[in-house]
Length: 401
Image (cartoon, rainbow, N blue to C red; front, side, top):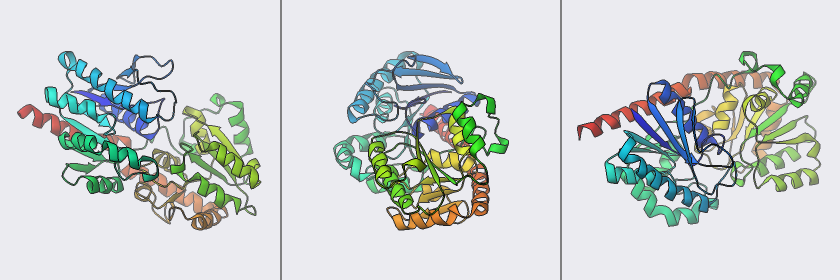
């Protein structure tokens, strides 16, 4: 079966949605499907390449940053991807299209359906759903609402990656076909240190030094992975940590974004700069080693679809302190695999940190339970199987028409 995946972000660019589309593409190829990905060009990445059996096409979309794109860049991708998708139809018409994000990817799928009857799925990720992150997207959602509704209503299925996101989608349009398929975790790549195949000799000297520093006498090491943006609630985390001077701790933030200067300024004013490290974006063995060197993952986000970083942390055997919001609440079992705290509640976050910073044995039990939970419910092979069943049903129904 020929499957086209459209997503403006695909590794190495973008965040969780890009990773999800890559994992899905690889699983579909492993199942014997012919998979093509249409994504945005960036810097000197090749315009076409085959990677992991997936044929990748990168189109000009005015993309200037690795980790995020502007509204203008999204509009450019929406228009150019639509033209490119329609140009593919005469020679290599896909059997099914999977559009990650209703906006910007869905318009191309909608056009292929109107002109050639190609069935398509829209995979909702968060920011493309009206009501998500109103402090960032309220105006955008009001303007785009008619287009979003048009794209959703012609789709054969709308897929939300969490029950909370599905509820938000139903509040916007209750008449569309909707199901929930969560994100998955790469259980081979992300695993506890004792089962990892990462070789120490391949790590940078800095990572080797960190490995040597990790001992029973070292302070507990907290980790955050993601964009440094208001959505992620890092301002709340820094406020909580500023009140925990008496507790030993170190914090590593993997990622970058517009909130970094504010966070650095806050750390300096509150005299915690020496205990905070900004690691920028990491991947491969360097990112895995950060998980392995850490004792506790912290994720006080304000809004999420289903965060890949939390899945990765749990797969690596880390306990998680996270805000009690959609996405997080489906992954973290409060008191079993970590602690859930009310969003925007600095005092509750401080208390949760204080509990686990002094209880390493509890952290180990929670981390082990988190790994078991990901193995049982969120392996990418299981998630991809749900997509494949859905895709197969759509292709079969379309062939009968």
